[in-house]
Structures are given as C-alpha cells and as structure tokens.
Length: 157
Image 1 (cartoon, helix red, strand yellow):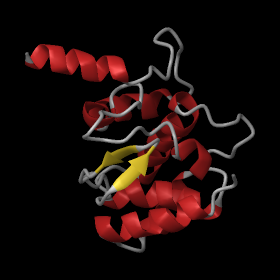
Image 2: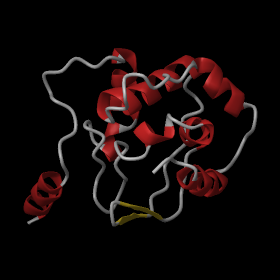
Image 3: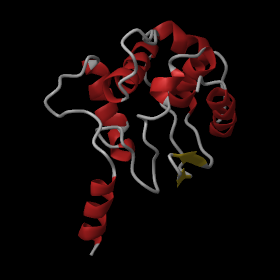
Image 4: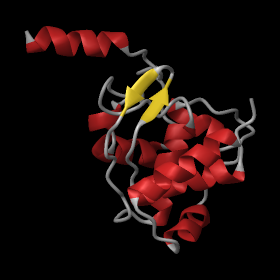
C-alpha cells in the first residue's frame, strides 16, 4: 500500500527539468542532489505535504533585492512555518546549510533558479558576495519565514 501512495505522490508532481539536459550550474546541481533533493526532489518539484517546490518562487525572487536576500537567508539559516504555494500547504522545517561555503551556496541557488526554475536568461546570477552579506546577520528559521512574506509581497506581478 505504501508503494502505491509513494507512486501517486511522485506522479502528482510535475517534472521540471529534462533528464537529458546538462545543468548550467553543475557543481550546484551536485550539491543540490546531495543536500536538497531528498526533500525537494531532484527536479525541484517538491514533495506534497512535506517540502515545497523550489521552482515557483526562487526564479521570481532573483529579480528583486529582497527576493535575492530571501534566497541567501533560506539556505544559510533554514526556514519553518506554514507556506501556501499553488494552493498547497507546507509546514516543514528546512534545515540550515551554513556549513557550505558562500561559493557553493551561490552555485546551488543558481542551479535552483536557472536550471530547475528556468528564470529568464537576463536575470543576474547570485554571487558568493550575496551569500556573504547575509551570513553576517544571523537569523533563525522563523525570522527567515517572516522575511519571506515581505519578499513575496514585493515581487512583480
């Protein structure tokens, strides 16, 4: 029975990236696979009821200063609290990944934003300096979640 439930969960989430396509950010893809894919799945489509898709907001966040800040804060300090994305609720405690260096976190975020999320090619990739700037201001996962509300509100429609 559990196998059928797992199959239904996997079938319900849309595929995002073509398996034959080489990622633009290969190092970020490898780190995503090792650290993030267990919850967000290799395609970034998320796991219903567990972890949200990373293909919806991150490609939009890269377009604003507060959105870019949100991306860095999320990987550095984790996040928890109720989220609603595409009419689905998620209430998962994402761990922090501050143990990874700034260059690797920027690569992971660029993989999410550009390879998985298909942000416009003219969007500016994140740099290690973007991560370093946020590393200096330690937050907890609840504060990161609160910042997310402001970042989402500031997105262009």
